[in-house]
Each structure stands twice: as C-alpha cells, then as structure tokens.
Length: 168
Image (cartoon, helix red, strand yellow):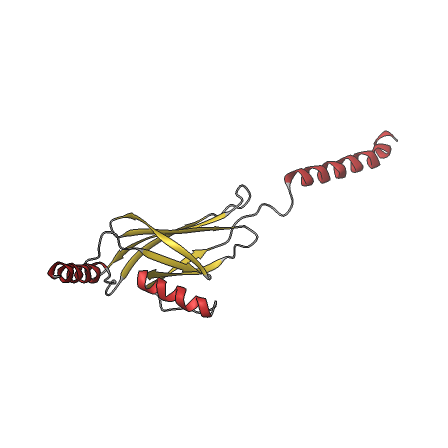
C-alpha cells in the first residue's frame, strides 16, 4: 500500500517535471524556400530555429507547428534546435509571408480539441515565426525554341521578298 502511494507521488513529480512549458520563449530563426519551379514538382519551405527559454527544458521537449491550417511536427535537429518543413505544388504555392505558429504539447492538444468542434478554431501559440517566400520562377514567358523559330521565319521571308530586288 505504501509502495502504491510512493509510486503515485513519484509519477506525479516526474510528470510535472517533464510537462513544463517554455517560460519567456526567445527564438532565432532561418528560412529557406525553393525559388526555381522549372525543375521541381514541389516547392519546399524549411525553417530552422533555436528556442531559448528561461527555465530548463527536458531533452525530449516536443514542439508542433501549424501553417495555413495544416498541423506539422517540428523535428528536433540539435540541442534546442528544431526544424519545420513542408511542401506545396507550384500552382498552389503563394508568395508572401507565411505565419508559422509553434505549439508545445499542451497547446497542440488544445488545438486538436478545439478543431474537433470547429475546424477553423485557433489557439494562442507558444511563438510565431514568419517565413517570407518571394515566389518561384516558372520559366520564361516565351521559350527560346519558339523565339528562334519566329526569328528564322522572319529572316527567310525578308530574304525571299528582297531576292527579286537584288537580281533585277
């Protein structure tokens, strides 16, 4: 009986230690997006960030992200370093600022609960990161083959039309 209570107390102490959230979060972020849509089938968006908190975080501190209504997992790539990435088709990829909402486990659970009743619901994030996508290059308006063909037709027409003037 005493063992049961001792185990319960240890479990509660361990859960409060590991379930703490980040206090006063500070973030340094770097972003990358695909800029050339002529050779790729998907536009990649990648954000790496370092999270610094006033309190020490457990080594397995999980973070999640929400971008344009899509839920994503933030991959841990180092000590307090995380990465969020996703892809979109070039036709659906929009240029401009993409707001990335970073959530801890508690915030992500709240978001999922809120989305069950209202799909457009949102919760306040732990922090927000802005990723600027300037747009992607889809190729020239006129392909070089079409331009070369048009120019050769113009040169041939001009040469044939002026042929009579030269021989006369």
